[in-house]
Image (cartoon, rainbow, N blue to C red; front, side):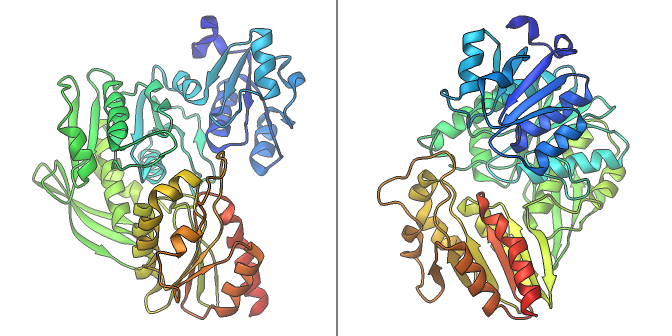
Length: 465
C-alpha cells in the first residue's frame, strides 16, 4: 500500500473512485486526471458530473460491481460507501490499497502552499472567495471545494501555481489528513450530532486540526465568533502565526458596513491602517466576514491587498449559497444549502433585506434525523423569520429513521398560521406558485434534494404568468 501513497508514484496508475459523482470525490478525480493519473469510478446513477468526468477521460461505471475495480491500483472511498459495497469487498479480497477521500486530497496538496478552510458555517463560500481572488491576482491556484463556483461552474481545478486551496470538512474528522501550511476557521458550533456527542467533542477535533498545521504556517480566526474564541484560549502553539479578523478588536478589522439588496460593502483596516473598501456583489453581513478571512489568507500568501480587493469584487457566489435561480414578474426564486439553525437565521436575515417590502416564502427540508432531533426548537426559531414556511419531510441522507422524529417536531414549535407541513413536493410547488405575488422571494432551503424544486418553481411561475 505504501508504494502508492505519494502523488508521484500514482502517475500512470489507475485510481478508482467508489461514489465518483459526489462533490468532493468528483473534484479530486478532476485534479488527478489533469495531473496525468488514470481515473475510473462508479456511482449509482449517471449525472452531468459523471458525464463531464467521462469527457475529461475517466472511465465511468453506472452501478457498483466487483468487476469495475479489476484494473485499479488504488481505491478511493467516500464516507457514504458501506463496508458491504461489492467494489469495496472486492478490493479487500484482491489486496488493492484503499484510502479515504480526504487522504486522496492530502496527496494532491502535499508539497504545495496549501490553505484549508474550516468552520461550522461558511466553508464553501470562503474557499470560493479565496480561490476567485487568487485567480484574479494571477496566482492560478489549484482548488477543491464542496460546491461549484458560479463564475466558472466547477468545484475543482489543477492550477499552474504553487498554491492549493481546499475546503476542510470537520464532519468526520478527515480534515486532519491535510496538514496545510495555513488554515482559516470561520466559526465553531455544535453540528454533525451523528458523529459528535457534544460541543467539547467539536472543540477537540478543531484543536487537533490546528495541531496539524505545518510549523511556520498560519492560522486565521474569526475574532467575533464565541466558539472560535473559546478554542483560541486552548491553543498553545507558538510556531505558527495566529491572525484574527472581525468587527471587534482584530488584526483585520471590518467596519462601516453597508448592506443592500444584492451587494455589501465595508471598510478594511489592517493593524490600525485603513486599506480600502471591501466590495462584494453578493448580499449578507456574513459574506463580508468570509471575504475578510479570504483577504487575510491571501495576504499571508504574499499577494497584494489591492489585487485581492479587486478580485473579491468579481466574486458572484457559489452554487446553492443564496443562488438566484430565476426572476419571473419580480418573483425571485432563491436556492440555498443552509441546514443548520444558525445558517438558516443568517440566510433569512439576508433574504428579508433582499425581499424589501415583499414576502419571504420558504420551503425547508430538514437534513438528517439526528440533526432534526437535536435542533428542532432552534430550527423553529430561525424559520420564524420567514413570512410563511412549507416543511417537507426529513431528508435522511445515510441515516435510518428515528422513532418520533419528523418535520412535525419543528412545525409544532411554530405559529400554525405561518407554517404548513406538506410532505408532497408536487403539492408544495402548486401551493407556492399559486400564492406568490410580485415582490415575493421564494426560497428552497436545505442540504437534501429540495434544491430540485427551484427550477420547477421557476417554470411553474412562467406557465402561470
